[in-house]
Image (cartoon, rainbow, N blue to C red; front, side, top):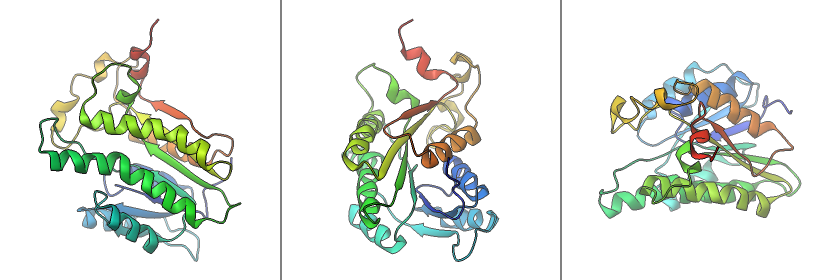
Length: 243
């Protein structure tokens, strides 16, 4: 498996929580990390300052962009320039009864912006130079139950686009996804959002963010894997399967 060292990775929503764990995992491997944030610039700057240095001439960076604004997404991609890896981690969660404008933002952040970024960065690479993408989904998107919430619907759309883009952009672009189980609840719900879920899982615990981060690094740098969706969910997806 190729070493991420000396390569450049953009991670969206990387200032805090799961994104920060992914950023640390890549930096620990020697990658140059571009930390995307929206409103959490102070946290992003602190994270970058705490990362181990990467080999010259690379450096860790912070970029800020509202992913709900696709014009801003295009400007950000142009400013960042070519990367070796893209991790579409940023997510937005609102209640299903939220105003339509907020539901539209959620769709843009969780589905439209990741697909736009994949195409933008894929187009920057020379035709024969590999580019690797990992989308962060949600283990709930592996459930066959319907109807889905608007949040789940956006993540399900990204799940469906993962193998579609892997086929379309092959052979030099790989697109995979990680579907985490309960790691952090939505900020809007606090701890109440998943307080009782771990006890219902086969492994009886919540998911360690470092385990998700390791899975992301593996998929990003595994040259024979594309179109895969890897659950890292303490067995949550097993609950959706018929015995």
